[in-house]
Image 1 (tube, rainbow, N blue to C red):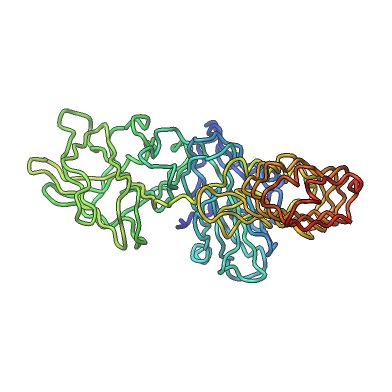
Image 2 (tube, rainbow, N blue to C red; image 1 turned 120 degrees about the vertical axis):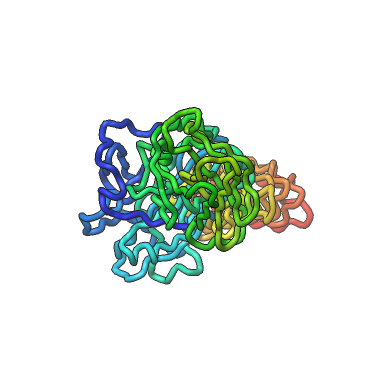
Length: 506
């Protein structure tokens, strides 16, 4: 689900943060740019080092944030995906934020609609039409744990992408998260997709970096309920999710003895499981009497009982809470509580099942093959198998975990390069079809490919001997090696005399 952010400097980025250092260990990309973009204390760098495809363009606009003035777009309608790749720490947690501002870069009227994904998981559909119509940009946010030493963020065409239109991106951010943040989520199986994050009772600007260490956006939220300001500060580090102190500066409340009812988020939710974090602080000056007790209900179901809120603040979390349609939060005061209940802030994420990942040995083998090619297919980045409809061009995989590569068909792609020895790590491979290209060098030992049934290397520039191991592959029944520079006088008998094998050598 997208969230609109306004484009003017004063709305999106406070101007009084220039002395604050950059967040550590993060990637902030100014997509399609040739130079850095400074916004407050943050520096967004060009994206060239993290992607090898796409075209750059600039918008003839000076009334928008600097990083929205350029973008990268992807016109190739045959490529299955377009991926940014970031070095990360395996099994560590990251917040990924993508930002889009159409700006009619392609001369059209309506923004393109397309998919975005993280590694092997389809994250969401990018549809910025409503936000752009009101003059805004759109941002999407997800929290994942890195499954490998690289994290990929990809865009891809879908059934809604019109012919002649192109997926695009304006800015991309990746933040390393502390281990405690959202730690009740099973990230081995799930991804968190941001739905809403609000500071209640606030009339100010969006809260972000440097107030939030991870540059999360806390949008102001008010309704018909009374609101109050806090008279003391909390220590963000005492909360698992490390919310910004400013998120506690205001609260929605009601009178003593009354229930506080909030319809939040203010839109209907699709049926699913959600992660909910709610934040509270007694707003009065610290004293022995700065406390209030109440129960928390969500859609009439008790979420937390006898919550004792003091001036130190606290948070409560529902790690897997079912929601659908309208969401109503009700705070019911205890009988002896001298003041009404209150709430300062909230975060809501949809829990999305992870799409899984290709087996590591297959990923490594394919990446080494890509490195040996001078002109690999444009979509050879990210996970080779997943999502299934966005696998690498020429790659077919098993339909269930463990996800293995079963077929590699690059016939007639005009590829230049060599075949690395690591190709033998694709031990589930049944079809290796590389005919009609410009491969050179020797044919590596393929003895580990026990499942291989068909080998086509014809019409290339391979040289040297035909590996004797080919005759020992139990399932091999078709070998095409003609029109290469192979040593025709040294064909292993184990291949030529093997029953049931069709061999073409000349």
